[in-house]
Amino acid sequence: MSTSENDPYAGTEAATPEAGDARSRSEELRAERRAKIEKLRARGEDPYPVGVRPGDRLADVQAAWDGRLEPGEESGEDVHVGGRLVLRRGHGKLAFLVLREDGTDLQVMCQQDVLGTEGMAALDDLDTGDWLVAHGQVVRAKRGELSVQARGVQLVGKALQPPPDKWHGLTDTEERYRRRWVDLAVNADSRRVFEIRSAVVRALRESLDARGYLEVETPVLNRIPGGAEARPFVTHHNALDLELYLRIAPELYLKRLIAGGMGRVYELGRVFRNEGLSPRHNPEFTMLEAYEAFADYHDMMRLTQELLQRAAAEATGTTTAPGGEDLAGEWPRVPLLELVRDATGVAGLDYDDAVDDVRAVCDRHGVAYEQRWGAGKLVLELYEHLVEPHLVEPTFVIDYPVEVSPLARRHRDDPRVTERFELIIGGREYANAFSELTDPDDQRARFEGQAALKAAGDEEAMAVDEDYLQAMEFGMPPTGGLGVGVDRLVMLLAGVDTIRDVVLFPTLRPRRE
View 1 (tube, helix red, strand yellow):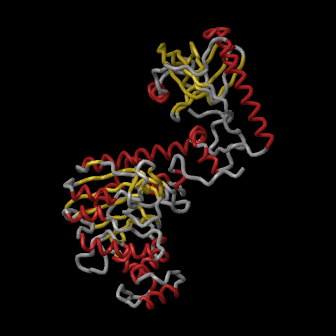
View 2 (cartoon, rainbow, N blue to C red; view 1 turned 90 degrees about the horizontal axis):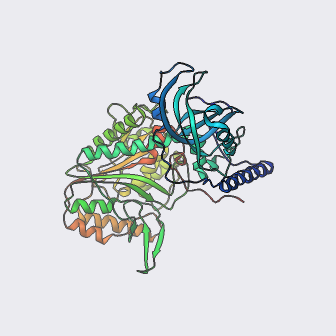
View 3 (cartoon, rainbow, N blue to C red; view 1 turned 90 degrees about the vertical axis):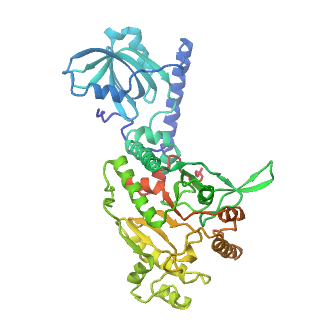
């Protein structure tokens, strides 16, 4: 149903009142609601009862009676419904309450000749925001609104805080994230985003399960942070007197399972990186990683395309994102070096070039760099500044330099690069995948190179993980691996610009007092 403009929950934004007068009024309303609680308890009524179970969902009632009953007609069938009171109007012998449950509204019609004098008087103890249950027959009001003609109304959860100010709403965007429960109550768009998120996660799981992948859980507390280049969060285990790290990726544990003979595994869970906040970055976020024995990065490209296309179709009903990005069809595959050559106009640019020559290309295009970087890292920096932001339609950027891909297999035809790709859509990375490195000697050499970078001050470089090397020495089959950033995928499909809109309770800076 569409609710009246008097609905205090009808705003699309919400925040705490800013002015001192508004805060004072809010406290007055809280005091009034507390007084009603005491009044109820004095009558022997519990404002927070337990064991109350309405038998009918509002959405089911709306669906069952859609298009049925003429204005003023009674159904003769009773329902027992519940929800939050979002609107009330009327006085004396007739009052209307609007209940909201899971985004669906339904009107409850309260008449003195049905409820009686005491029943109507009890409505005075109700406030917007309260949780109620009501029972009665389904009717269509004279103005055409599907309604429940109440034979009884019960308060089952008294709200002490009033709803957001109807006219000013919540103007502080950060307050929406701090008080997500208010945001979800007043903002249908926010609720829709998290419904899309749930559908995306479900589709990813179902797709992998159908392909014979086994979902597993690997440690969140790690002795050695690995699987990605990022700064970890550090914690301490008191009983073992041991420094531990929150995982930055589950990759190395999942590949241990491949070495153990589990041919297809995936994990969908939180990872943690001690980095800055931005519209695309939250310190904890959700990652899907999947690994398959006897697969390579070509297989992972096919898998990535199928996973994302199905997730889009099932979550939103279309493979076209709200921003216009078309996920249908086959996605092009383009070598990274080819893209950089086109962007810089240097047709002969190569990974074998002298570092000073590649630095000169960076200088001409205003791309900053560090003196310790080699040619591969410099080419990557050129790509990230000059190319990636302009890749709008889904594109597999393939064949990354070895220097920036410590866990990926060297390319079978060109040992200077790896069999690695990133999926770029709308100028953002959505997936990263390899033909996995399975040679333990090559992996040890890469780890040692990373350790040297760490010793030189690179806090994001990897350490040597001897335990993982032991697993590799046990023997690993050729393997393809894939990582998908779930939060960014939801952002794309929901059409929102900040990761805070797709994480229920994002990390925020402390509130200014």
